[in-house]
Amino acid sequence: MSTSSRRAVAWPGPVPAVTDQLRLLAAFALQSGLPVALWRLPNAEHPQLCLSFSAEDAFTGLPPALEPTAPAGFAFFPFHDSDHNPALFLPADVVFSAERPHELDISDEAHLSSQLSDLLVFISKPDSCDFVSWYVSPQPIPHIADQAEFSALVTKGVEAIEQGAVVKVVPSRAATRPLPPAFDTLEAFEELQRRYPRAFVSLVSAQGIGTWLGATPEVLVEIGEDGRFCTMALAGTQPIVDGLTPQNAIWRQKEIEEQALVARYVVSCFKQLRLREYTETGPRTVAAGELLHLRTDFSVNLRQVPFPTLGTDMLRLLHPTSAVGGMPKQAALTFLHQHEHYDRAYYSGFLGPVNLPQTGVSRLFVNLRCLQVRPTQAILYAGAGLTIDSDPLREWNETELKLRTAGAVLDT
Image 1: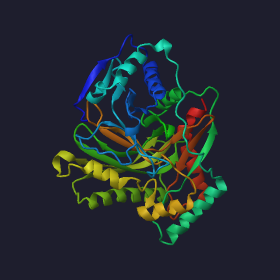
Image 2 (image 1 turned 135 degrees about the horizontal axis):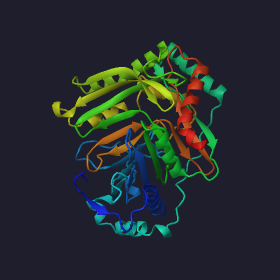
Image 3 (image 1 turned 60 degrees about the vertical axis):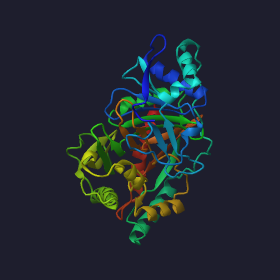
């Protein structure tokens, strides 16, 4: 399904407010047993929604292809693909953009489905719609490490670096928070949009994975309308305190070295593909919510290099990035498998739209600053990049800061 094999269908009946449109489309998906994804791109004004008419076809087990002729849809990929955490790709049978509230973008294949008629009837009668609960994860709640346990993990990581087993490793942990009374998942998505205009804000819900909310600052791979491939190296963290701005931030040697390692990893992926024609900009300090990070940007003009599958190839080389796993990749992942003692699920995986209708743009982000919604509580995730100078208390405090980003919607 290419981005050109699509048609616009007028919204049936009176056009409600955008929030009500999103709620109706999500309700149809949930009532019909279908996966649904909502997102708002960084610095964009309007959210978008994608749903697929085939729940079975959404679980692919493979990273998506990013070439212009590849299927359009929404990807939701775990840290490790497994039977417990399957890779999700929602074919874009129906795409709704709040920028064009009077229409739905429908694939040619979806026009042949009886479910399209069911959808149009459903959303044309909003007064008769009973909203259905979001999907609940079938997996048990992951192990929750306390400060002493996480500090011991950090100490083991630093020892592994001192012994030369790894150059960098990124341990993480999960935390639980109670859901506030009458918590509304869609309202939480809207609150994340308001709080973090520069982040990629998402809500993904499907049988088999549950319901996830997030506001991530980190691009994994991007292919724009201009045919330019982009990625970034993002590492180093400090809180935004009174008077601190990206312009006057001062970084410790530990954060500078951590960011440099991530940038070198991106360059090493280019070298594996024998690509030399890339542009590197940075590092520079950027704000992400209530935190500052160091970021280096990389770009390649795909129209000027003989690498038509560069986006797909780089995606498969980069994930999981050194910013969420460590370096060397396999040694760091082996360390985490042996010592982290919990299942990250979709935290530090990736997500985002692929070959968007109208533009063909693909924008995939590392799934950081995220939480999973359970019936009475949320599970939040955060990690910290270790170097030889890491201190357990500082790393614990860094994860506490990161947990606040997505967790802010639990305080409203």
